[in-house]
Length: 67
Image (cartoon, rainbow, N blue to C red; front, side):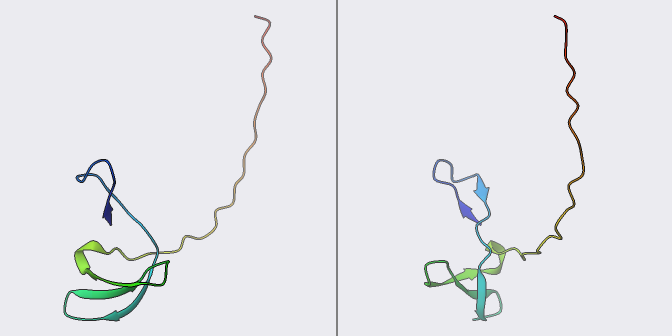
């Protein structure tokens, strides 16, 4: 979770990233997309759960109006 550019109080999730190693009781070494490694405290991390693909079923009704 990293602060957005325009407001430090608003947070957004980035990722998912690969956890390479646990470096302490509350710190984890994370491999970022550019290949760099960075250590994050556990309170800055959230476990990623891959969602099951949802089946999209639906239709659109077109109603013509005389107006």
